[in-house]
Length: 146
Image 1: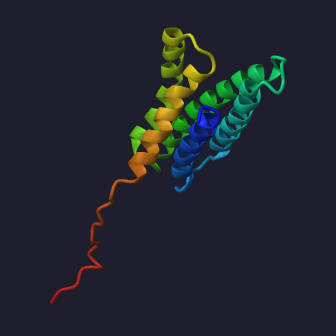
Image 2 (image 1 turned 90 degrees about the horizontal axis):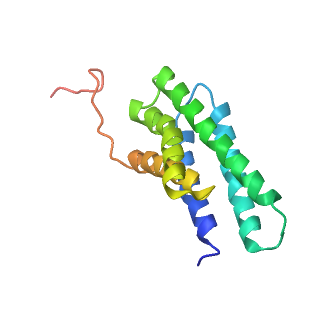
Image 3 (image 1 turned 180 degrees about the horizontal axis):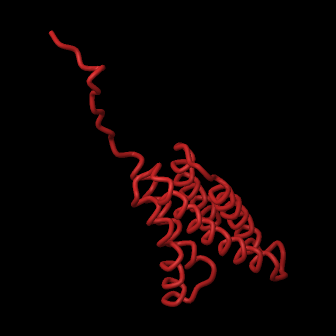
């Protein structure tokens, strides 16, 4: 089960990213960068902890990928706040992941997983927020009178 943990974490993160991809966004470059960086970090996490490669390059590259994912998260959150295409809390959650990651790193002192935790929670919150039932408001043209 421990060997599957990075894959399960990645699946949870990608579910949150899928929720972001569902909606039209004016700029998707930061979102695509965040997705690519998280996928790369997950693959490198498996390589680093499997023991197949004894050098430090998988770990160092994973740290760089996580840093890029966090910065892309903030950039995409800022784009969402400016575009007004999503609820404002979605943009703020993505932007707040960066200072939360720094705080978590200071408290936990465990690199890179402590930095991924706030971003994972942000993506999970966005994913769960997409599951809420939506209420439909009838427009005047859609209303029928008897």
